[in-house]
Picture 1: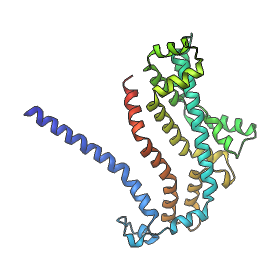
Picture 2: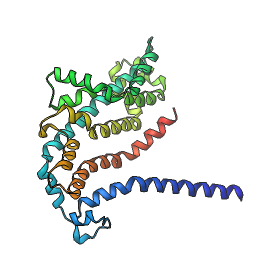
Picture 3: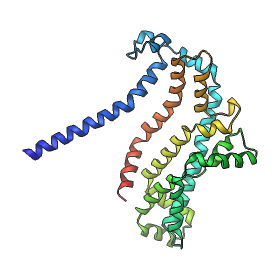
Picture 4: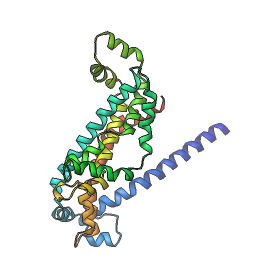
Length: 276
């Protein structure tokens, strides 16, 4: 009986902890989204229990008047697609080279890749800025993407996933005459689809939420990402908290959609990665 009671108490405590974390995460999202649909007077009075009769889309209209939302949204999507595709591709190639072919120095190479995770991003701003400016790519989509074509964390995720693939599969594919690229894309990647989806989601969310570098390397409002544009609402003349919340919601919703759509693969990928 004591053991059963202890298990019940442990289960209740676990669910209370999960509920507390959910509240901490969801309450700011709720306040932001609700504020986007409320009149300015309701937001300033702290009335976050919405009255359907007061709902309005005027905040979104004002936000779109302040920033070129359409062009900045397209820029953000292009940056996310290009950066995510490059990072996942290079991570898959690097992870394949670090796991399957046997060559001297691959452990050192992996250590050096992991070491890049310890380098503060701020220390790379000036070299990246000089490099991109020297190439004449300032104030362009390529200028935003080029410094982030590879990510050490994505390499770590996929290498961990590849270590769980039976080496016999790789050897059989090679004996059948498959080259390295065909083996990678036809045999290895389909086997680690959950972890691949996890890496893709991580890269996409990081690319979508990028702020400091796009702000630094772009000048034209039309070439800036949506995150930088929304930050301009704060300093815009006459912008109310409700308008800022509307702009923030426009940035937040795609991220939530990515997590909701890919949560099944995300959980499977993290669970599978923890076993290796």
